[in-house]
Image 1 (cartoon, rainbow, N blue to C red):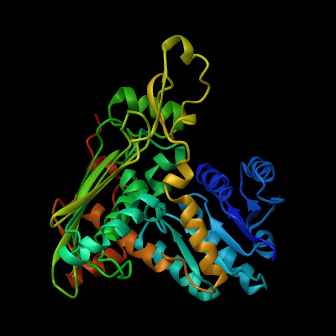
Image 2 (tube, rainbow, N blue to C red; image 1 turned 90 degrees about the vertical axis):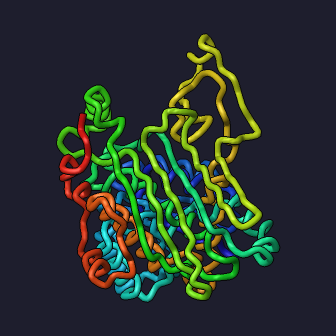
Length: 415
């Protein structure tokens, strides 16, 4: 039986991480890539890593003709156009078995819904890539605590944080292209994993009903003149004119429709975590039990002194988003697996082969977009957003945050 052929649209940071994850999966080839830049480099990596003969295609349509499924790993602002090109290719005869989209599904609720509708138009299974729900640590704690949960009841509080010193590319920092700041970029992760771990074991991912969202968005580091200039020089984005939040925190309240119990998911995200590198910190509290996961608790540490540090060409060899190459460093030996990338690809491929959606589909991704936008609305209005209120839900349907409109200076403090 031939390997499943996966094609990438996009060849940036996330594409490289996903390709690295694929080296740990049997029966899947990275068969093609289309991207405005970096395609040749990614194809070369795929070939050298045993992922098959990866071909660089000049268009989305050509890619679709030669693969079994397409993964959209391109920037947020290009998603709608790419999705339309995929649908057109399917209508022209491309025999795709599924479509993958990296988080977030959309920058606004209308954008996310448009991707859902386009996938339905093409009559194709979908997989929304939210890697943290696929983390082995998250799945393992649920399995370990299943008997306890059955006896004591499900978790009542989940707390999730994702923090690092900031994205790699300029468009991530630009709220008009990315869709916001750290809340749009990483809040979707934390909200999703909080919702997931609170869900009673055996229930679908959307079983718990969101009833309220409260949030605060702030510009703490990157609004200071010194750091604004660094950002402008490095990324070409001027936070004196179009700022985005570099810190966000909040709470999503859910209701169990069977018991009426309210449970809460707290999220915290920042682009100002100037420590070892990317940190994922998650915990959950139930009656008489708890779990905690910290991605920086590695079984491997190394120490590099000042003299030896000159030999370190890339601080990220130790950890994603690492900002230091000396001192005591936590080293994660397999980040692609730790963060859930391996498992989410395996899930998508397995489901597509069976003709069904991945564990998380585009409709789920649209729900996460709605919760993120409700958080932005809460921060703007300075009050809790009631998701049971009909008028509020109508307002959210067309809502676009001031930050994503480039009007963040109206609500964020720029030093």
